[in-house]
Image (cartoon, rainbow, N blue to C red; front, side):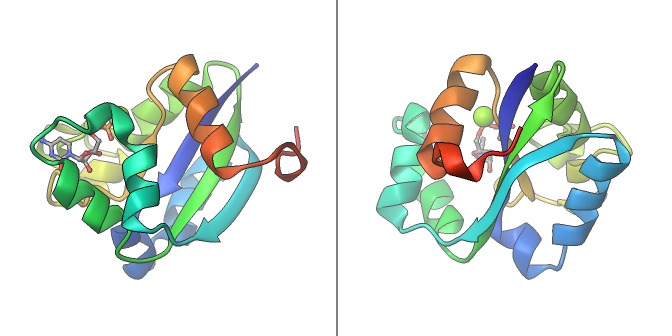
Length: 138
Ligand code: CDP
Ligand code: MG
């Protein structure tokens, strides 16, 4: 059993895609173990994306991620990190497979609707960034 952090980014929330994304998780039998809507400050987004602090897109990304509410979810299941990454599609929607969330709904690399952890280590950090243990129901 594995956990991963999913985020519906500010573009996904403002475009009314919460139900669409959550529906895809449910249709794929994914257990949502924790879920809430929050709004980050830019400093909080910088802490979340600290691995990208030296990237050229860091400032723009953290400004975007703090521009409005996001929905954070802890997903749980076998191989869930890879399963979620498959449902999301490639970072750049132009390279994402048809039928993935990013290909179906995003049109640019930054505002690409969803986030998903990329490893067990990042999943542990990312879930702990937003959830305490009473907010996760296995
Ligand atoms: O989200 P993912 O793990 O697929 O990609 P990442 O390489 O970890 O980058 C994190 C986020 O930064 C992406 O989802 C994009 O929102 C943004 N990004 C960007 O704006 N420009 C890039 N060239 C790469 C990523
Ligand atoms: Mg990433």
